[in-house]
Image (cartoon, rainbow, N blue to C red):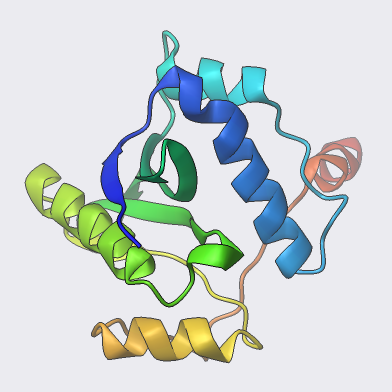
Length: 159
């Protein structure tokens, strides 16, 4: 099956949101997605761009995406974070994931970043094997720490 990797455009955002929801379902978090198409358009293409998105297109349909944003490491300097790399279930095993990761790594190199970070669920062994095969280091001794919106407000109410 043929596909092309390109920078996302505003018109892709409904399909990108569909892939985000597909990923949430795969990760057993069906009801966790709060972002809307309008949020994606504003945050990816508005006045204050917060992310860059690549899409994979096949037969005029978005079948994969990779979304990255800028971060800064106090140890290394500028880095990018790969928030999500999603391949539609029907396209897995076609090389599309590799092509999206290639685009992200080339983008990071073009920007001159010192590192590209992302997370992977510890039970997603196929993804872990994929990333390790590509030369990524999966740091199993680190835990992800988050404060969600409710946690932020709870925190602030205690200080």
